[in-house]
Length: 127
Image (tube, rainbow, N blue to C red):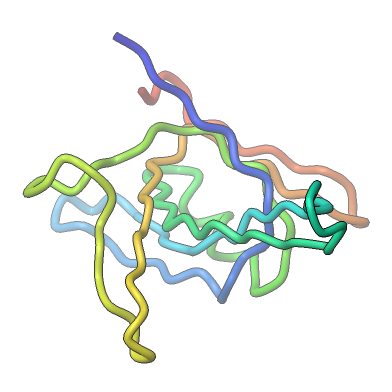
């Protein structure tokens, strides 16, 4: 079995890095991927944004923490991590009372997009 997800979007905040007890680095950040379209019935312009929580492990974690910041564009390739208790996305109620669902992605590669040139960091052999 194999799964892969590709996300292109903007960072929702600055990345956060920490070290595991094993000494390996892990960096977490959120990515907003959106789309826009015209409603066929009303002609109204519609927007939809989906948020993903991304975890980057190993050698690529430190450059992600160093070079990425809120608003930067990235292309993330990886696999979805499901909630261990439910097997689906993490579901919670936001402060305003609306239901929310969060998708978690374990990155295999992160490509930095933008005007400074593209930089790619790939974890060799990481599945």
